[in-house]
Amino acid sequence: MPSLRGVNSHSWRHLKSRPDDPEGNIMADLNGLSLYHKEHCPFCHKVRAVMTELKLDIPLVDMNANAEEWQRLQTEGGKGMVPCLRIDQGGETQWMYESDDIIEYLRDNFA
Ligand SMILES: N[C@@H](CCC(=O)N[C@@H](CS)C(=O)NCC(=O)O)C(=O)O
Image (cartoon, rainbow, N blue to C red):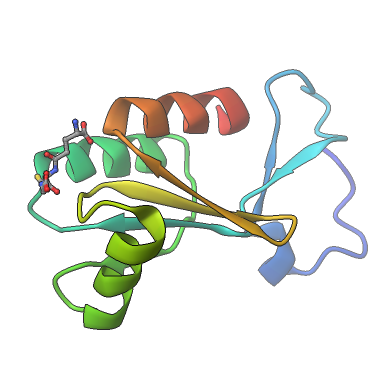
């Protein structure tokens, strides 16, 4: 186990040890990720199941409950389709569609 000294519980929630680093010295950062989804969409369910399996605390944005973000998904992401993983990194935003691609990304980075 890596030392937790200096890491508060809030910031720790967003870090995952990487598969190539069993000692947990390098941590992958969940910050900047959010999943645009709909509760009853089977493709979204598939992605959420993998998030549960990997214990990933990624915020969910419900497209049936948030008109402003639904509009953003279409204009900035390019498609009104869910699931879509929003990745905010280095001042840029990437919109990843396709449940299989999202699952591959999560497994590659956080399994
Ligand atoms: N191939 C996509 C299919 C996703 C999909 O069809 N999602 C439906 C909701 S269950 C949707 O958003 N449909 C709207 C559309 O395709 O414009 C995936 O695996 O993520």
